[in-house]
Length: 225
Image (cartoon, rainbow, N blue to C red; front, side, top):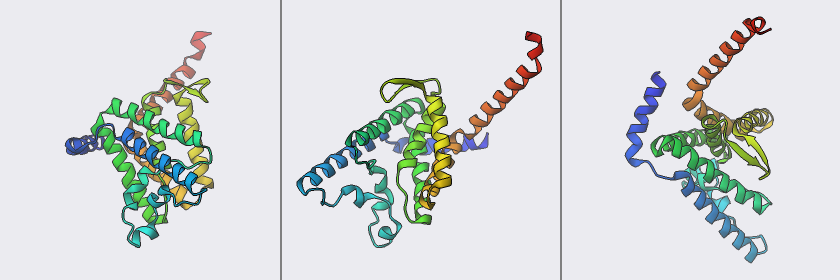
C-alpha cells in the first residue's frame, strides 16, 4: 500500500535522529515538574506559580512571545487533586510508551509521536488551546492494537484484556468528542487521525476478515446442527 510505503520512507529519513526511549524521557520530565510543583505549593501554601501552567499550549501566549509553549506542552503532567492518580498516569505513559517503542523500534515510535505532536499543534493553533492528554492516549490506542490479548490489572485487582480497555477508551473518546468543547474535539480529531494513519489499513483488514468469518459461520450454521 502506498501509505505504508510513505510511512516507511519517513521512518528511514528520521532514523538517525530518532530518540531512544522517548516516552520514558518525557515521563521523567513530567515527574520532575510534578515534584517541583508539589514542593513549591507546600512552601507557599498552594499560591506559587505552577511550572505546568507555564508550559501549557496557549495560542494567545505563543503569539505574545512565549514560543516555547508550542512544544513544551508535551511535558505537562496530568493535573489532579489526587497525587496518587497523577503518579499512576505518569507511570502509565512510561509503561505503554516503552512497550510500543520496543515493538516498533525507536524510529517508527518517534514518527508516530511526531505526527501526533504536529496534529495537536495544528489543532491548538486553530482553536486556541489543547493539552497532551489525547496525544498520549493515542499511544495506548496503538498499544491496544498491537497487544489486544495482553492482560492488565484494572485498579491493580481485576485482570482485563487490553482490547476491552481499548474499546472502552474508543467509546469514551466518542462521548467526549460529542460533549466536549472545541479544544477537546480538535485534540481528539488529531489523536484519532494519527492512530488511523498508522493503523487504519490493518483495522480495515481485520473488520473485513471478521465480517467474512461471521458470514461464513452464518451460512454454514445448519451444517453443525
